Length: 58
Image (cartoon, rainbow, N blue to C red; front, side, top):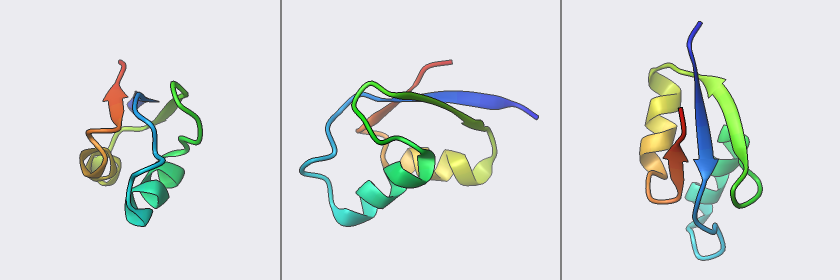
C-alpha cells in the first residue's frame, strides 16, 4: 500500500464550499499541515480538484 504526503500551501478562506469540503476529506484543516494518505485514483482526483491549494510533498 503506497502512501503520499500532501501539504496545504494556500488558504481556504476564499475557496468555494466544495473545495473546503475536499480539503476536509483529505484531512487538511490548517495551513502548512502535512497529511499522509493512501495513494489511489480517488485521492488523486481529490488532490486534482484542489491542486491550487495543496502541494504533494513526497
